[in-house]
Length: 181
Image (cartoon, rainbow, N blue to C red):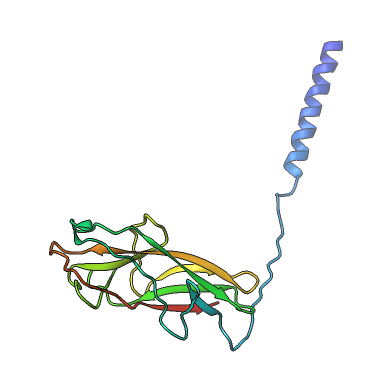
């Protein structure tokens, strides 16, 4: 008789716990979203490696190299880091960055002087990156905190043809378009 009462009591407890589980409401959460923005006439002051890139063309030197340093197509010189500094941005919180210039070879910016059919300039987010920026594509979204941000990029010469590299200077001027949000 005692064993029957124990079984009956444990069966009743199991039914009660299943019943309370079945009657419980669904799990739920709530969240708040704050939408904000700003209105201002001024944009960020942009410098590249300390040079005012808005008033004049900033210079990034890629160094001197031997033509034999780039023997094969797609070979590259060591990457050179350059930093874009966004300052006095006020209430601006996002900057979208695009690099714009001629690209005869996809992702490689054309040089204007000697060797323009032999080498170009590759820009990327990392020193060893080969995922070069396409002209006009948004390549970065910079989060601006407390009115400023610094973003690093890398540039290098890239060989684009089998022709020999001639001695002499070469350069490319690449425009940076920044859209704020």
